Every structure is written in structure tokens, then in C-alpha cells.
Amino acid sequence: MEFMIGDSTILHPHCDPMTYPHLFPRGDKGWYSELEKIDQSRNRKRVSMLQFYSYRVAIRATFSAIHCGGKLFKQYIVDAYIKTEQNRLPFYRQNQKVPRVELYQGLMDHLANEAHIEGLRPGRVIILPSSFQGNPRAMQQNYQDAMAVVRKYRKPDLFITFTCNPTWREIQEQLFPGQTPSDRPDLITRVFKLKLNELIDDIFKKHILGRTIANVFVIEFQKRGLPHCHMLIILNSEDKIKSDNHIDRIVCSEMPDAARFPQLHECGHDCANIKLQRSIQECAAAQGGLEWDEIKAHIDARYVKAAWRVFEFPLHDKSHAIIRLAAHLPIDC
Figure 1 (cartoon, rainbow, N blue to C red):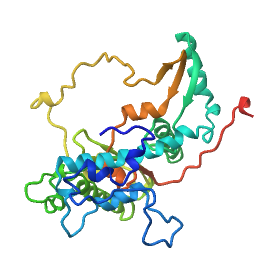
Figure 2 (tube, rainbow, N blue to C red):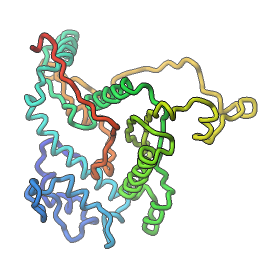
Figure 3 (cartoon, helix red, strand yellow):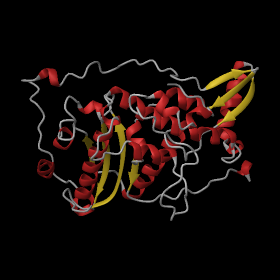
Figure 4 (tube, helix red, strand yellow):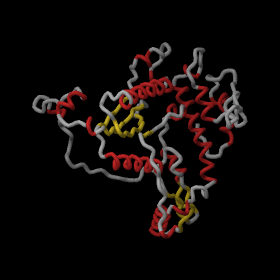
């Protein structure tokens, strides 16, 4: 299913039952903007689209046709998050004055230079602010936040990767007969998040690897869809790794003998020539002008891990809050 930005059909309550009749044989209504909460004690009185889909794919004791849908369930949960994101993007397109596009001087200079080379005039600039997770600007600011932690507490001592294992007992016991872990992205996501919380508790509260003073972690996804977490941990000066024996107490592994296993030490050619080219069309010529549309570039090149985003789990976190100070150039004053 392909949704266009601003397409009102995705907001119709009959969109889901008509698209997935096997999952909703009774024609259960989907999300609509006037859907109200039962408990209106909080400020928000209506259910958001993300809250609705998170509730719909939740695991319950009763039978759920959605969880037995196989590939159809995976398509449904991807469509659910795409519709949620597509519902947000028109706001950024129609409110470009809010992020103050004209102050992105570096971007404006780059666009003017590209237009001069192509013999065109600079066109409209549409940006995605750093508050929109998943775009390059947000990733750049997260990187700068991580570097601020490193500048304060020095280089990390431990680099830990925690990978989801589809053969975990907690996953296998909850599968229906005939199902494989790939049929239940919701189950894999929930189990991995629970185990990740336990690992974080062991490292940062129980100090099984030593006392920590700072950390940064990000969530990534393999091509087969399984999540994994990369952690950078900075230890207290008294608990830092200072000898080979200390490493052996933490890591139980050894390097294979180069004489007995030479194939494990071959890394290919020392110098590799790699051709770099743009994978997405950042600029588009329209009516003689060169436009910069980050919303279109995001849609064309995005990779969606729908289950993780529907449950609103964080994609990154750090131990310290970073205050981003506004720096104004003389031309902006």
C-alpha cells in the first residue's frame, strides 16, 4: 500500500478493515481523529494514532487474528507506522516558518552554489527539523551530544553489543503452533526490550562490570529485522581496565592461532577502491529552479522498523542531559 502525504483516506476508520478483511472479518473500525479516551483525567482527551495501533497489536489472553496473520501481520504493522508518520509530515511541510528555514545559512549557501553550477535559480527549501526522529539532522545532533559526553568524561572504556536471539526461550514459548519468530515482530521487540532493560540495570545499577560514570547507547536493526544495541560505557577511574588479566576477567574469548587457522586472519586487500555516489535525489529541478525537499528524500530512503516505533521505544539514550546552546553568527544578529 502506498500513501501520499496529505491523503485523507488513511484517516478514514474503514481504511483498515477494507484493506485487511482477513484480519478484521467483522469490520472493526480503525483509528479516526474523533476517537476519545475512556479515561479523560489527563489533558489529552483523544487517542493518538500511535496509541491506537500500539493498543491494537498488544498481546492479550484472548485470541487475536492479527497475531496469526503471518506476513499479513507484518505488512499491517508497517502500514500502521507509515500512516502515523505520513500524518505528521504535512505539518512540517506547511509550517516551514516554525523551524526558521532562512537561518540555515549553510544549507542556503550550498543550494545557491548547486544552482549556480547547474545554471538554475534557487527554489523552495523544505527541511525536517531535528525534532523529527530519523532524519540526518537529528542523527547529527545525537552524535554531537555523544561527543559532548566524551569530551567531559574522556574516551569510552567498553563497547558492548547486545543482539536479539530469536531462539530465546521467552520468544519460543509464546509462538503459536506453526509460527516462526519472524512472524511475530511485536513479540521479538517486547522480549528484546525487557532483556535490554535487565542488562542496563545490571551494568548501571548493580555495577557488574564496575562503576560507570557515563554511557551512550543506540538501537539498530539487522537486515533480517532483529534489533541490537550498541553501548559505549565510561568507567570510574578506579574500575578502568588496566591489564590483560583484567580483560580476561570480563571477556571470555581468545584469538585463534594464525598458523593453525590462517583463513580467520585474512581480511582481504589492504587498499579497497569504493565508488561513492548519491543514493537518493536530494535536489530536484522544478520550473527552472533547484528545490531542496528533505521530506521527499526521507520518504524515498527511509527504513522502517515498525514494531519498535509503534511501541514508542527509544532509539537512543545517554546518561547525561545535554544543553544545546544557540550560537548566532554575526550575519544573523
